Length: 459
Image 1 (cartoon, helix red, strand yellow):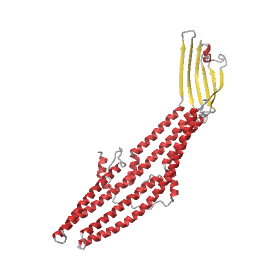
Image 2 (image 1 turned 180 degrees about the vertical axis):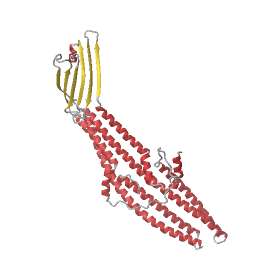
Image 3 (image 1 turned 180 degrees about the horizontal axis):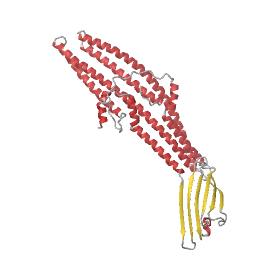
Image 4 (image 1 turned 90 degrees about the vertical axis):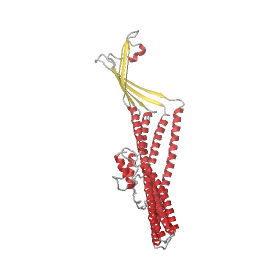
């Protein structure tokens, strides 16, 4: 264990109560779930870089020498080729050399002694003009980067919610253990007083036996509360991590003494909040970008149904001293046409792309409806949890007054131990109900903020 982790576990440098904001910062910066999503983004950016490679400048060269035989000749060529995103045009430029006794059927390879420079341009007029496989791949890769960014945002939103829940459960478990400790100490402190009164004949022996039973019962409840706190500590450590990303079990010295006082939430209508959520939720942004990618593929499939019709142009400049190279400049223009007679491949891709679009649109409608329902449900949950907390708070106050009054009567001999125990138990149940109500409120608040797409988790 590092010194930092040891000090953390001991609570040495962090005696102040652990706050939710500290947990959320740790979770967002060091959670493996967020790191995994970040790698998805890195992977998408790498794929986009790879798609950009379709427009890398290409270079090629070849040569052939025939020094012995019926024909004695040399040919060589070298060239550059560049595909452009402008209408799918391709630009070529290079150098050709063809000298010696070239056979007649290779006559088009003949050049002057110094060779020739050539340049050409190919532009598609139908298939491949509006979009082609390279541009579609690049556009889709760019959209996937945006999808990955939304995935990172979604991971952050989920981690914020889950870290908030883990924190409040830890606080709740700490309060339960503190209450169990308090009730046990009350019973232990009362045991000596009861023993003295029994010895003096002021109380029957059965009261001492009953208090021993109460002590054992509360020891068992304390052990159960201890187990609950250990479980909550382990859960919270998944989001509370050191600089190297290892889980940190929070020190009990940093347990807050109580839950923060709940406050009423937004006064806006559920409809207004739902519209806000539809703008903020990264899952919807992720789905929108997936739709954009599907639309790109659908446009590519639709364009592939068109015939191939390319116009080509080129120019060749023979090299050599002036007057020695007749017809030194040559201009060529031509067209290329082709089409599959059945086009089943292209039609099948188009039908599949349209099916993907319809599927994603249905998913979007479902997600939008679910988000609206989540906002409405979570808003009602926060409001009712607040009302419940107010009621339990008042119940604790009354139960405490009754408990103290019963303890005073017992000290004066006007009440028996059973009534004191009952009042203590009623008070304990009221405190536990308040703890549960506070946990319910802050759990509902975390769900509410998740539904709105907010990553801020402070109460």
